[in-house]
Image: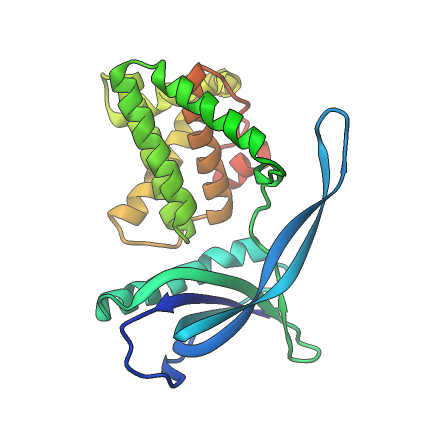
Length: 301
């Protein structure tokens, strides 16, 4: 077994004391600290190709977060088999953190501020030390070296939205707000819900009649033509069912432990992003990664 720890720090205010204190222990520790050093990832371009592609190096440096005078730190820990991947462990720790953060925010109105940083660590059994593990997906395409491409991309999006009919403009505007919300929320279950809302909003605009399951299925069929023809459309219906069931488990059941949470969120994100692109300019997309779909239970046959 290997031990994992997700350390997250938040800014705080409205505190009349300056001393460090632990308010709760056990597997999810809640404490106030004066400072905390956590790793931060940086990207650096090492070369550029004629076609515009870049080669990047990924590095890390220690970033010290200072309290004013204190920080809230939540330390979620768990044990997992040695062969379990950190990306599979992370959602479990995120769930522990979310529950603790929710209780703290409710219990102390106006105290807990934005998240400042986090780090996932695993314990080395040989020397009892903790090592940082970067288990966040890396989106190299989000790295920009100059403002020109940002300006062009923004102008393109605004032009595409303005060319839509009024009701579709409203739907896409809502989808883009939820897309931003999905980037801001911290935990897999919340991100899965946000991506589902995007699908639901766009499906309602694209297909006014039928149940929401029929609407989302029809949207995914249009967005992923290759998936529509697979197994007589059964794979798309299965995909919609799994995404919908996950949303219901979180929203109606109050559960955080989604099955195959990492694969679920990556596939949901892919579906939401492809659906927004389809609404903007009718661009169809390749289906989500086949291995991720298989892990979710959406099999090829």
